Image (cartoon, rainbow, N blue to C red):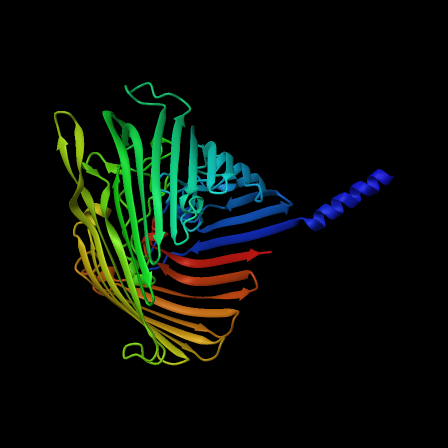
Length: 549
């Protein structure tokens, strides 16, 4: 009897001294055809779609256990990875984390990133339908005060939690704080190096020269000196057979490499950053057959577009996607270019700052293909190191943010764009745009406000000129209501001019938020963090729920 009592007391005390966290997110859509927009007949067989995630984490002393249950039921939202289906475990893990002694070991599914991610990044993005977690062992050790080591191995998730790639992914990463080791006081100097390998479970026997193990190596350095910072990273990927259009290109091999340089200078009211990058055959998949898939399935590394993530809707019609891979049949490989961002804050009381100050920002980017030559005798594609080939994308934007009173503030923005639509989307003409956007926010009180956006885009091709407007009213901290419309009034085909209207609202209390909206969704690319997913045109009702406790 005493044993039962003590066991019950132990379990009860364990429960109360432990911590449990629960997170729920559910996104549901009901698709409705109207006179202008109809979804594909095959997709129309199941008009109600829902993606739901329930995450449970249990913390007890240095231990952590967790799982994520995922439901794509009756089916996933249209144009998500078709391997996401039904109800299953998405991730499950056990972790031992002894922070004081520098030991962190995870068994099960885990996310990881080495350096900038150009050599390895496993992550989840529910808006894009990406979850490329690794399933295996991830061990992080602090070898000394300034030296950290990570080593991992496992298989990559490409569908539901236990839909795992046929190859193994292994890797090691070292981070060394040199400035701390040498006791630099005003200089921050860090070094890093990584290795990632993909080991095929079954040998490719139909083609000569194919290695079971493909290796990638990277080295990087970052320097912070006063107001100035500089970092650089180089990655090399071992030569591998080209895989395109669901088949091997016989006796055709290419290696890959990437160079990334970041510079920044910030002092007083001025800030700046410049990012330069060159990619050559740097898409790295856990299986060759995943090469070029539109769902980012099985991607080992992270190759985002280095352009600014704009807020206004018309600025996101022609978004750039990084061209990190090789297109063998079009004899194109990689990209080269960069982005820049400068800002200056005019302080209060100056001529341009006025009574409340003014924020001025200028940013832009330029991206082109590598200048390449092709030898038909040897079947070899040569890329010149720092030569620019065909222009892919360019943008330039100027933004002014200004507060005119304690209740009213405004954003005004102009953007100029070039978009190589024939190459990037297979359309007929390239597109040049000029976009003007303005937003005003009026605060009636600390909790009540109204926001109005007006935009116009002049475009030389594709669907022509667009106009857009958004009106949002926030009556208090719990509710928000909005109505918006985008209209391609300049479409040269009048019958194709469509109002993409939407009306909706949200309710928030504590960690719970419910949003409901009805309207049309413009087809095209939706991008998060520089990674994009294509969505088709649709019309319908959407309900979103998120909560944590």
